[in-house]
Length: 449
Image (tube, rainbow, N blue to C red; front, side, top):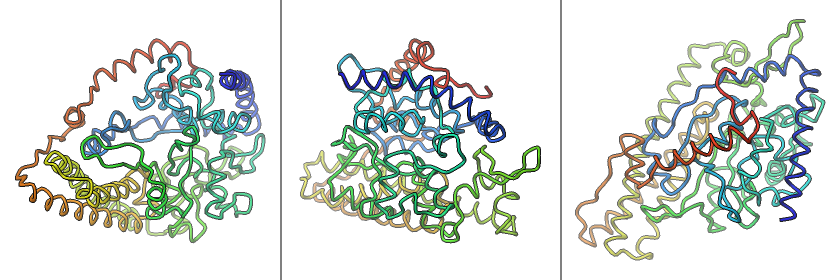
């Protein structure tokens, strides 16, 4: 309890210092600051569960089956974290709700607190206990040393991860440092249960889908047990740095900044990287054109790769949904753990690879070769799983498997027994009664403001 009060006291101090840091940045770098503010215009996001309703089934039993939207501008980082159904509401007194680790990449106040009070001390706090003190979104200090344009990698989990793969930040060339700065958040991770659920990047063996899977399997780690199939599940989270690090761009020393922060001129004609971080293809003439002269060909190739990933992922999602329900039927028929083990692990490994590509925002652009390779392996693995399950079902004389209607998000959520109306009402009441009244304005940023 003393540690909790200590952290809250420190966060109270940060409220003032963050406001000062914002004012200082605005004075020192007015052009970049103005561009950073323009991420407010990147306000559109899409309900990804509605777009891909099969994912509700695949993520049944996890928070992602409740709510999952496409990303938008950095200015919305705190608002979106505060308001998603995945972070829930404040737990009852004395209970542990969602970990404060969910703030790790949404605000510099998270790593500033970790630096003073420790990663585990911060992670052991409730997400909602930290919320009222967060008044800064992703900001200058997340990428630069305070008051300077010198690059920085302030988050402890990122510093540790880069050392694991022998890429210590301070020894890297500029293109790699700038990409690591982005990669401290645009990277896959998990919450480490034996360390108060602090953020950890699973790169002990390496950062490919295969080697991260090896790490998880070696530890016998799982994030949740799937309620339909009883598969011990894994979850990938936006592994953009991983894909980029093995790409043609990385081999040619072209980093995230080169594509997503195009060089522009200020009013005095001075060149700098735009801090309105955005899509590379939307700025083709100021980013891609320096290396790719044939715009029509490149954009067509991107579209073809994107379409291949879309088509393959949907086919794979349908197969995975069927595999989960076929496993359920086998269990109900009386199959043993010994009989089910190989099929269960094949589902786990297939869905992990599916997630490693589809959870990434732009794998078809960042590394299309890897995206195709990983998804093709996932297709093979789920085919193996279903073949094994078909034999088990035949042995138990199961002739019919009932698959649900998951043609929409609502039908899929109904199929897994999720009371989305109650969850939505509970969260809406919490937003109206607590977040809107007691939290800082950054938790209530509206589009266009």
